[in-house]
Image: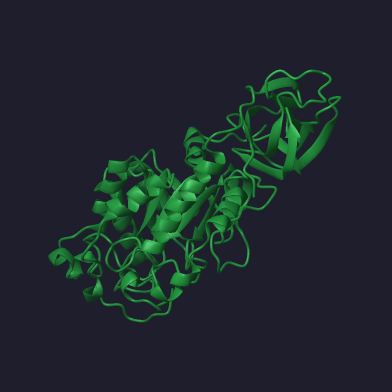
Length: 424
């Protein structure tokens, strides 16, 4: 029996594209690195022009459906006035110690209709609560998570970073019970009782095949092997990546590494186009604003996506021809067609599988009907489809495209087929 995704997971896959905001005390200490132990006093935190609406508005205009904010990174600095920490915005000069970045961020997401995600690093090296005291640290961790899940209304997504937790034991039942009690509708990424998983790299790419029914998952760049799960689960992959190379936080020294639109489009097709979600990071700067080059590139990327995939070619709705064959036709096609009636150049087919009862397809091919006597030509061969498969191939003139399922776990069901000509 196939393992089915939950409605929350189906909705998550429909989000497709999210923006990650790494912002905190590290935004004021360029050159510092994860786990370097270098002091970063809270007195340096002062984003005088903080504008979370600028962040989220830019994400919305680029086509993102959700956002994630680092509430506490590995350094321990809390972006909200936590009662359980003496290393937070409350100890900073920003807004005379009365500010709350999490509150402003959540309000911005709601103002622009984007789903609210919060990142929290379970492990930390900074602050006065010691990570090497498991009992004390569990209390601190759960108290902070409780603040985040109690004081800001509905939270759609809780994103845990496994980095630094490789050999640490947490009170897993207590953690999961607290989260599920406070926010029954929340989605959890990766570490405990997960509903989505890390793809296993920080470059934005999903492998092929991308099988979402798994009995283990990767959770940290420092772990030598994947972690076994308590049971086999349906866990859609999420591909996180940085707009700039080198660091997740803003750093003027790497301003020349902002990714090109061409590269971002390729990453989109290797992530969303392989049935995963794409999570693209931009680090707001010490002003509290998105850096101009990053914001401009994000908007250019969104515009390019709309130009490429906004309007499919005018093929008819998908028709199922038999148990393994589906087709779309560009209007009426004569049997003998030397004059190319109702044909057009095509170089991309976007396929969606109906995965409500679980993913089935493990091998398929795309066939294009050739002008003339109606012979077909295989233009693409693939593995999994899942939520979405973007099939790119050299341009071909055709009036009919077919998808033939060659191997599947039980009967396959396709949801849609859409043809495009995107050019280079």
